[in-house]
Length: 385
Image 1: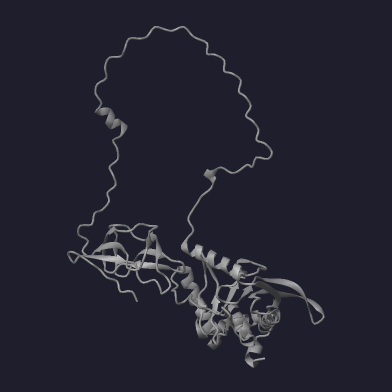
Image 2: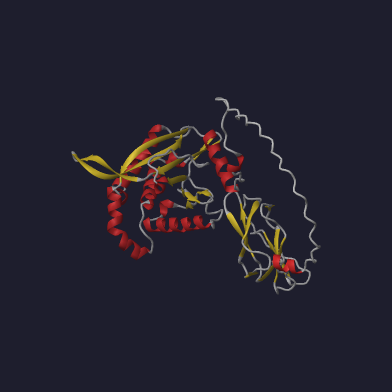
């Protein structure tokens, strides 16, 4: 871990510096100051935020005191150990900004004006002169039919991309350029999984302290599918294939700052409650911007749930260096033939995008079929069939 060093001439001043940001992160951008010079801060209270390619990191005050000054500015590129602010533990010598006094009013200014001189003698009347008639305006030339009509520049805004957005853009484009992307689809009847959740949600919440959602069912189904088709969990590395004997499932989470993908470690060893607790914790951290690098590193397979935004169907892009991604979508009641009769059933489209260099269509379809079988009949997990 990075050891923060503080220097002071009098022993009263300490430096707030950029902390260690992770093994793979060498620098970041000073995104915003959370405090102002003269503000009182407590020990370990965040005073600024550093934006990196992956996460947002807080710069904390090393001591309780008053912010004397900032020695960096927003937008600067900073490295671990860079001094950001100076904190006065006693608050002595900290200047406060006082608003400038208002200019004197017109009435006050009138009082200090010099006495006016006597009025000048009246000027004799001048004969009226008729103004010359204005020349008729020429009609403005009409734009040619081929000339494009562009909106004015004052109706556009140019803002720099955040580091996270640039990183996401680069990785997704690299994925598109590197992998032989192919997507296969299927349709899942959600009746039994939704019924299971409805019947046991209260007892589940009472015992485990977390709500029973649909995501844990899909994670368990993905684990079963990856165990049946281990090639989906593998990855190409040069001229070799790396088979992973563990299952770390990444969950794509959309945040106001961009897409982040925290990882559920060793998902094959977890039950429904452990999965739900982990997802709940990671989602809260993602939305608050407090995910660590370790919580997003790695992952052997990704699940993306566009259904929470109302997406009916999509073709998700693989998250490198993985080889496949499962896309969930919105649940829609549709007329389906069940036992020779037409019934309204809650249906969901699922999509599997995979690297066709490594995974054949047969394995991809078998994997997605396993997802469908387990979700439609969760009892298969108990019987391992």
